[in-house]
Image (spheres, rainbow, N blue to C red):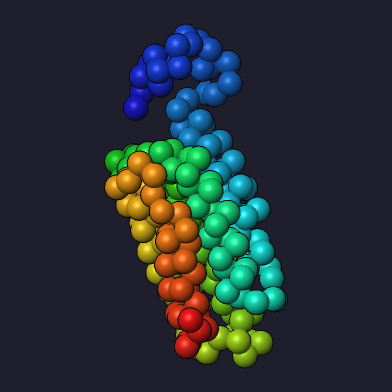
Amino acid sequence: MTVDDLMARTGLSRPSFYEYFSDRHELVMKLVEKLGNRTFLVTDEWLKGEGDPRTELRNGWAGYAAIYREHGHLLRALLAAASQDQQVAEVYDTLRDHVVAATAEKIRREIRSGRTRPLDCDETARALVMMSERYLAEKFEQAETPDIHAAVEALTTIWMRVLYDNSD
C-alpha cells in the first residue's frame, strides 16, 4: 500500500501524512510498537505471574483475542506485508522476537521452579507463538464473528498441554 492509497482511504491529503511520519515504514513501526505495548499489557499476567497457569494463560489469551478483534485487520495486513517488504518484515519480526523471548524466559522460570519439564525453551516458545499467531489470523479471517471463547480455550489447552504436561 502506498502513502497515496492510505491517504485516499482516510480522506486526508498526502501532505497531512508527512506532518506525522517521514514515510510509510515509520507509520508501520509506530503501529507495531503500539500493538506490542498493548499485547504485553494483557499477556503480562502469565509472563510475569506465578499463580495458576491455566487462569493466567486464559486471561492473557482473552486479552489478546480482544486486541485481535479490534485490530486483527491491521495485524493480518502487517503479516501479509511482511512477506513482501523487508523493512516491514524486520519491524514485525522484532515484535514477534520480543514475544518469543519473553515466552522463552517464562518457560525457563517454570522449568527452574519444577512446574514444567525440561524442554528447549527458545524453540518451544517460537513454535507456540507462531502457531498461535497463525491460528488467530485464520480464525478471524474465516468468520465475521469468530467464536472467541473457543479460540481462547483452544490456545489455553494447547499451551497447558505443551508446557504443563497432563493439564486439562
